Length: 265
Figure 1: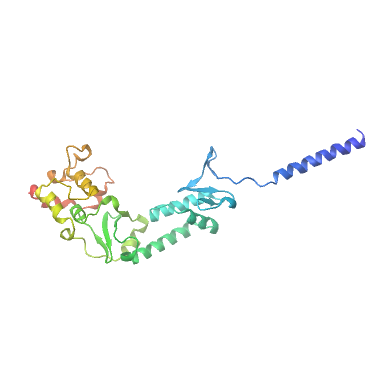
Figure 2: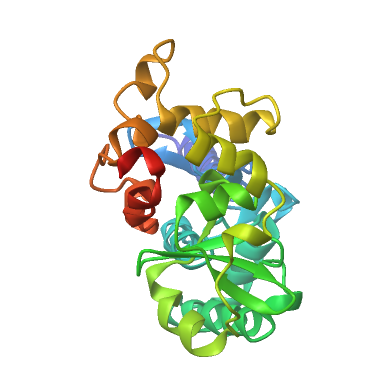
């Protein structure tokens, strides 16, 4: 091959290599991590926050991270200890600072101790909380008050479905840090007379109660028009049948009160 042709061929090859490296060096378009290697169409989300691999996409709903699975584990700690998902800004903070799960859990527990130490002025004030000791409490400015039985909860208008569950990991800090007041008394509740009429006098007109409260009473007293409630009938049968091992009504309340019902004597 003539030298000129060889030179041109070599030059063409060189330019091709340079062009290839130039293209390879171009920035890759920002994209979210897929949920798995098998589903590239679905972005990796943690509690509604999309995990992305470039800082350019980082915003209030996109979290920049190089280790999305680590943040998944951190979010699980929020759920386990605080019963909620982490916010996107919280996940971004942990991604940016390389927070370890051990350090995060210690911090979550420490913050929770502050809630319990000031429980009468914390976000828990005015709420019911339950623990893995199978106890339920009402929180007011004087601390945590045990609710021993279902009639007392009804007298106060407190629905078990509205309770906040204290995680098992926070059980000991709760019991050792929070202030505890006297248990709630049935006779101090705003609905005491109305519920007394249902409990002791056989009243079955429930319009005096708020709708959700009336639904709960009907569920446990039984109603032939409500198929799900017919197995309860606690006022007539003077017994409570657990619907499942994790049934909160059976686990959190003392049902010996039914022996005080006149129809049970």
